Image (cartoon, rainbow, N blue to C red; front, top):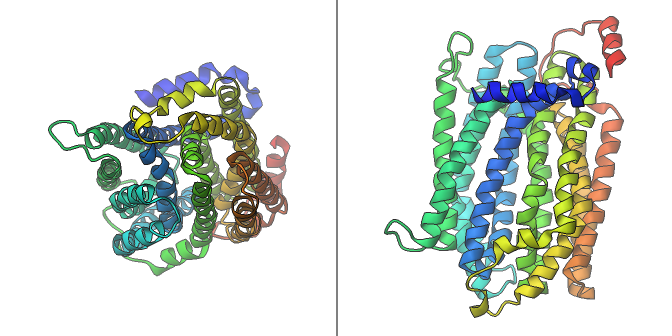
Length: 492
């Protein structure tokens, strides 16, 4: 019923687009059909994180200051494995485009096996490694203790998420994104009340503060993992025999490692650099760190559709490559980007004209007893949000372009681009600003905006070379001929 409602809603607003763009392959309607459930998925993740941070801010400004660096470092340390496992969606998309149903099932199972191996590794390595980094990050003892509690409590999320991702990729890669969104919305409905109960100590439980926030996330991820496994095993077996073809196939794991690992490493390197930047910002003072945490949490709303449209761009690109319709695949990114820009420009109006309304969500009831200057925090947040107007558009450009390349299996050159820009521009520049010049937090974000501009420009250059057209992720049927290519070109 919900799916039909949104289909009718889409038709109602179809007059805003040219008719030809709705009827041609790869048009706005097709992108939006797959993207909007992924946007809802992204919105659910944003709501979970936003409420978690708001509750922590109400509890104390130190806890909100600790949540961002700890959360950023957590995602950084698991990003390589998560994104590598998530490349299962691209493999499924190309098998789906080639109408190979058994290939879709085998890809999902072997993605799960990879995720399970990752979960076993991270169960021990993540808490130990993360705790060591936190205790040596140079933050004040009180902030560092909160960071460690939050990080260790969230550690189980890594394994749960990697295993869940493989099974959800079976649906995402086939364009069945509504089901994936429903799973994440259900997870959100579990996570939000759990955060409230565990952080503040409701229903007879003791208040756990930031530790409770981390535990709530872990319980919610366990729930979504079990739900994803159940849905995968319960699909119609005459169409997709998911209870069969469970055998381990090394060739699928090799594809994940060969194509997915560079994408995972790119995300790891980029997020590692950003996590280090956030930690260095902490050396500008607790107010600067709290402002960065609040501003980035608010900005989750500004770039909320970005990950959903990235995934949709990757999936649709992969599907059309599987059908050998490369010209259709080529135009997906531009249209996804236009859809994303509409949202980001709307969010920018709030950043420019009414930032205080958003900042009030994070006013702590205990701020006066902690010694933190919340007026300075507010001024820093406003400055960061003004820079966000620019860097969101640049970030959206590089993310959508990256999704297009990832859908084609072009992950190695983007990895080199990410390494160069993160570690040759962002990190050295931040060290110079924080430790040598003793710059303001606004000047650090000016540097971050410049870094994103260079990264986005290089991603666009890579896509413009057309090298992605020659990459083979799976064995594809023969091309349809020159006539098909010409007819595709006519509607681009």
